[in-house]
Image 1 (tube, one colour):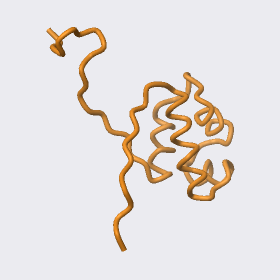
Image 2 (tube, rainbow, N blue to C red):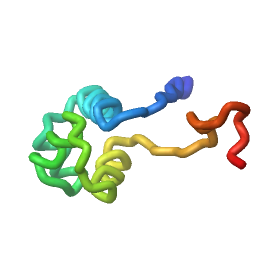
Image 3 (cartoon, one colour):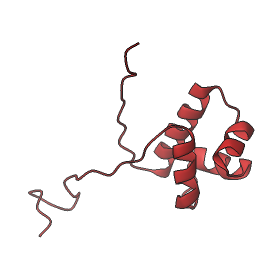
Image 4 (cartoon, rainbow, N blue to C red):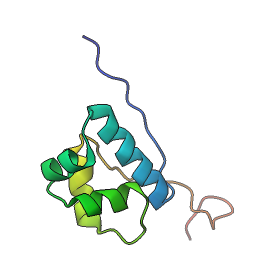
Length: 88
């Protein structure tokens, strides 16, 4: 069986992260309550995360991301304030 295709998504907002989390949860067929229990967070927290609330706690978000089989990575990118891509 071939490996599933990897889809990379550039997250630029809390709303985008919330959508990615919700999409992953719904693909697994889990209801919010089930996913929250499996990820070790509250239902309210998961709802806030999926709805893009900007004040959610990062540590809990990382638990949800891992619990849903996702990985959060950071890679270099030209800073928005740089004219030529250099940081200095």
